[in-house]
Amino acid sequence: MKLLRGRKTFTVPMNAMSDVAFLLLIFIMLVSLINYRREVKIEYPEAERAKRTSAEKNLEIWIDRHGGLYLEGLPADLETIETALGNTYRSAPDTRVHIIADKNTPYIHVNSVLEILQLLQYRVLSLVVRGD
Image 1 (cartoon, rainbow, N blue to C red):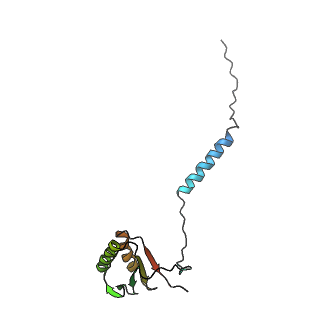
Image 2 (cartoon, rainbow, N blue to C red):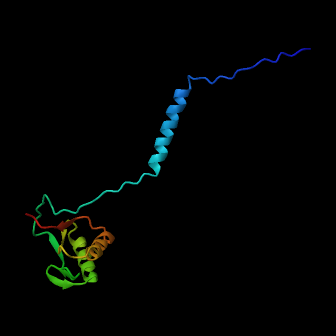
Image 3 (spheres, helix red, strand yellow):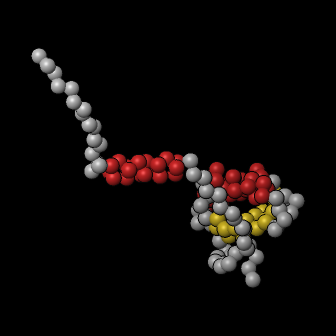
């Protein structure tokens, strides 16, 4: 029996090539976004718009440029401020806390007060800035 050996041609269907190219493009775009890191340059401006609050329901914490803490104008330490904030929150939870820091105060001193507020879950807070 004689077998016919002819050349068999292999053809790639071109109809599906556009679908494959489209899926490959989507895959490459998604993979490239995974490793994408955005960096944003931030400038810390002074307040452009101020909101006035009532003066009778405020608790003021002053921080001088050397990190000295003052509660309502009197020298205090972090424990005193924490106790006063806890008592104020229990008696009047809508009392607004004003943090008034010198422009040249290192942020670590402001952050120590913010950590106390975060620990007490105090949500009525204003950072006082210079208004023009």
